[in-house]
Image (cartoon, rainbow, N blue to C red; front, side):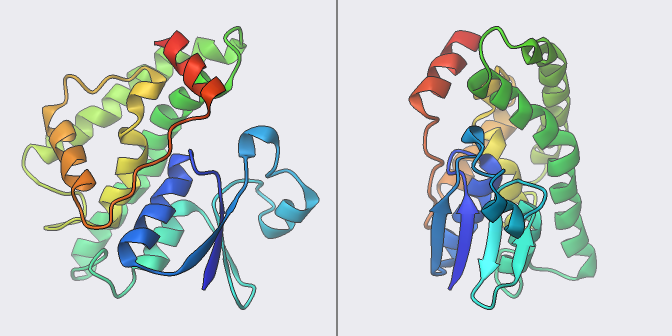
Length: 213
């Protein structure tokens, strides 16, 4: 049994839950609302001094942080992370892309739209975040025109990593209308066995997202 501390409407947290569900692995989920400062308490910071979710804790007390590191560890020796060293490195390459070129713009645009006040100065960042988000999506679209997945020949952890925030890119004002290959890939991910969707944003965040469109 493992315990995951996470915020259910966070893509970084949902990717861990999605893999656990698809693996059929038992786990305990403890909800931690980072938007309300719950990752800044002394108790939480003792687990992750970086003050971020998700956090994975083993029964023996060992802690793992960073969502993609969790995907890597959980998927070892499973069909979700396969191939020779070169193929596995390609999977990891897309996971690094997700955290460096995709998440910092697609996820942050969603956060700004849904979790900051409508008069927040951070909203000045949105045009640049959306521009960079489309640049990342264009890279994904080009790949998907020739390949069904990001994890090699089959669905795997690179797809899980990239799916979480791509599926809700419109929350940040980043529309997917011009990316047919991405939309088809999203549908394939949703059709995988034991898929679970991310819960909708809280009502207040959803209202802000609607006003930010």
